[in-house]
Image 1 (cartoon, rainbow, N blue to C red):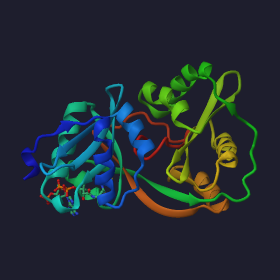
Image 2 (cartoon, rainbow, N blue to C red):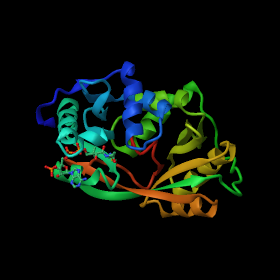
Image 3 (tube, protein in one colour):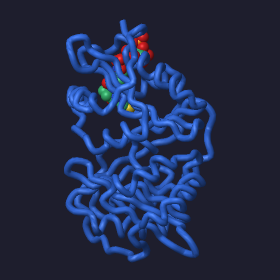
Image 4 (cartoon, rainbow, N blue to C red):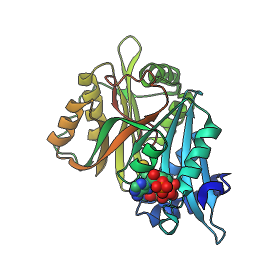
Length: 276
Ligand SMILES: CC(C)(COP(=O)(O)OP(=O)(O)OC[C@H]1O[C@@H](n2cnc3c(N)ncnc32)[C@H](O)[C@@H]1OP(=O)(O)O)[C@@H](O)C(=O)NCCC(=O)NCCS
């Protein structure tokens, strides 16, 4: 049924329908996050003739080499009729990047496996009011003059160009900070998501500097924080646990197509699971 459904490029006028579709699957109404995804990504969906959306997915292109897939949703009443495969397949084709990257919930995993994605890693999400965080004082607020250096550093560490995303982050985040040592060597952000502050991205030359920057960000964040941690960063998981954050859920990191030169040692936390 979904195999030949028309897939439409959505715009901000569809934001409410995207939030409604997420709510149908028990996802929180993350409007601030969706607005960023509409800005830097391509949102595709299938209309429900009765109003609203049957399916949606976001593909965010990074310089023609990587496509970050997120917000894969199909309305409960239309499940297992091919709509997920249809809208995802169309988005992969339209974005056209050789590599697609995503983090999969247990529910999404079978769909991605059926489309050729492979599991390359795992993340854990920790949430809570941090206890005993002492700011390390290693960082200062970023200014407009730091943006070029942040874009260049992110390019080296992430392994694909994300200039548009990096340029959007200072406005998207509550805090956006840099560490200097003869130039910008690390950057970190914290952004508001409904009733939480997400700590990320944090990119640093080593884990010690990354944890110091994470502490600067966490110490200034109000109330509940969330941090998504790649399992290749065990010291960051230990930091989260030692400050009283609780493990909430895991996702699989999945790739379709060739590997790309992502540096897991210097990527301390992602921007968000949706964007890597
Ligand atoms: C994941 C989701 C998008 C799948 O959408 P869908 O339209 O039901 O998927 P499709 O019908 O296109 O499935 C395509 C193929 O994927 C696999 N698949 C999809 N859902 C599956 C499931 N629950 N169990 C096993 N295999 C599944 C099958 O191979 C399926 O082909 P088949 O039905 O011919 O066997 C939908 O279940 C959903 O919105 N879940 C809630 C939100 C979520 O977790 N999204 C993933 C975020 S990472």
